[in-house]
Image: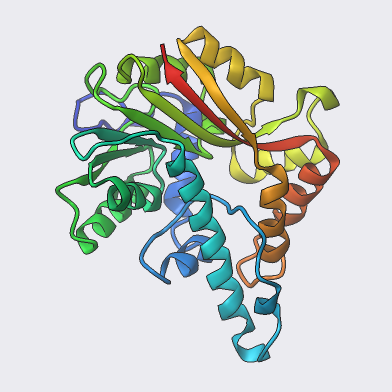
Length: 288
């Protein structure tokens, strides 16, 4: 099988596992859980939501109930992205940001709307890169928000290029030590890294059935909570804030389970969160 290369001439998909992950996202092009929500305002997310949902969306006329639920799920996903952006620190219009594992590009577009700076996104899914660049053009910001077919473990971008880097539910696809080594290279001294991720609880001992089910569903490898902090410390990334978002994300999954875009994985998330074997964390770290 010929490995495809990025614009920097290096193979992007370096291992059979990376090729399988790319194939998963390249072939899941019409998943309504992403598309139907993004059609509301043109901001297409590839992550989950936080905050309480409005119970009124479940009331009212039955024929418009699902439309209300879809809109509320999108509001909660947008709220999650805003929580991440709130922690990027002071960003000037002259700064550059990196969205590592950028999906369909929603958070990158929101970052540009908020800060007015240049944003790059990278993904190993050629479909996602193409979709996200189309959306940047639709929003009229293609000169400031660009998406690239590159590997977040070896982006090829210059040292110290980015004032801030974030990952939003993408770290479970890569080795954390290798990833944070690349981020330490891309960030200047004092640069900011923000992560939102699901992680296994070390205290419960071993991987629960529910967490294993999530891994299987998404072809990922969920890391233990302790692995994040070990990898950060090994790569000159000093945590300054850690927020447990577990309780805040449960309502999202409860509502999604009642929607037409439910995929069948909702119960595994709810079980894992409620039993304590899985945590949803926001981690903020500065490059030292």
